Length: 149
Image (cartoon, one colour):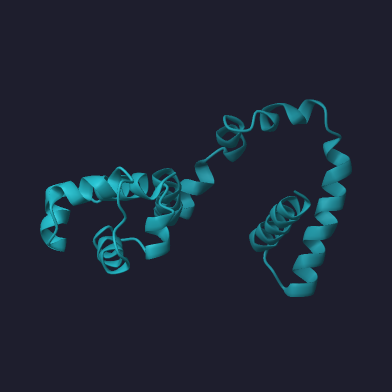
């Protein structure tokens, strides 16, 4: 995604018009349009002001992804009570179909024993509660997957 696209999406998400941003920055609406079309780029001071108005860090503005931001907000503001009601396998299987089918082909018992041993070791060695141990193990798996790429 380009910087211009990021600027436009962040501005719209903040509910601001090009005219409003232009007025606050002391530039023309056409300048804002050129930034959003990647014909020009704002200077660092203007970028910092926009990030503040859009409730983003400068890094987030530069790499703004509305979907990621919305997902982060949903996670942050969803209660544990609601989270417990979600069938995460069903939800994630829409994006990753293997989650809906692996139970029919994978020897789950074989892996369950090994995973249980890892979880118990994390709990015993580091004093983690069950959920924390699961999250740590999940994070280690994610790091290993990235490292192997």
